[in-house]
Length: 329
Image (cartoon, rainbow, N blue to C red; front, side, top):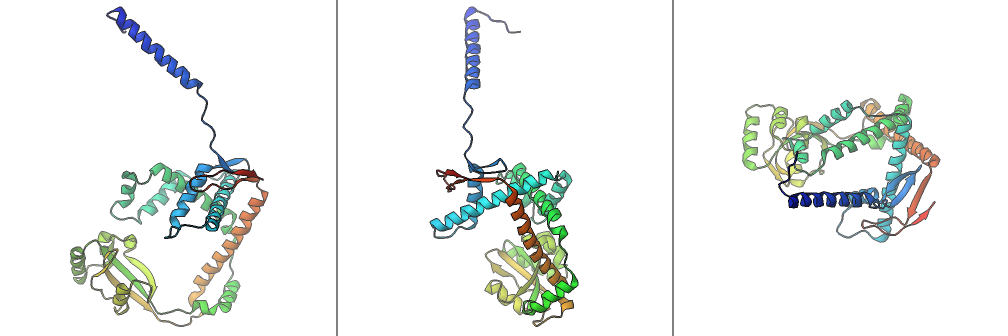
């Protein structure tokens, strides 16, 4: 219970309470903010100008070059961004119609897979530093998984590649399966030469390359024991290419400097150049033919969904800073 020592204090308190009540009343009577401009609607669901401009800005970051985009290039980019947003909206609606959801365990499992591609707690540091909002990123990941599952169910799981189809494809594309001389390479990358020389000494003393890579390497493939896969000569930077091309299988390179750090390489195996038999590349042929079929089937599937959707676009589309538009059906 509040006890007022004098009339002045009571009046002051009452005045303050009246002012707060007045301000609250004014706040409640404020007109709601105007709705955000809409770039397009898909079956009645809006794609806001803010959503469009954010997606456009991300794409512009990916295509940054010394010279700015001219008007035609910008228009093509805006149309591509809008088409991507329309396709995404249609697919999300289709997933909703099918009652598809992504369990929390599936999202968390994918997060752990992604975390393994980062070294030395860099994944967690990215969120702690404020560079990326974790909840926003997680929701975007959940949506991506949902769309992947939708396409798998509606398209990919219906694709079949027979041995006969694979052999026919191989015979018609034999030149694509002629291999050049390639080296299977693993690397360890350190931030400075002193550490790299110390690690090279450990390796020469007999420590396992893959195990050491997982422990100390700062490169993304460290989780795979430093395995970079196969490379043809001339693909990597000249200094690295020169060192690796002369390295015998199973031997260690000297420390090689690059803009990414100080590298130690090991050649795991080498492939000779030349043609291959179908049996040698059968699995590769099936994978490539399956991807081709999936791409064609996906295009047909999404085109059908778009043809059945009610899509309205407000043109002209805004640029990065927005622009006036007129509505077109």
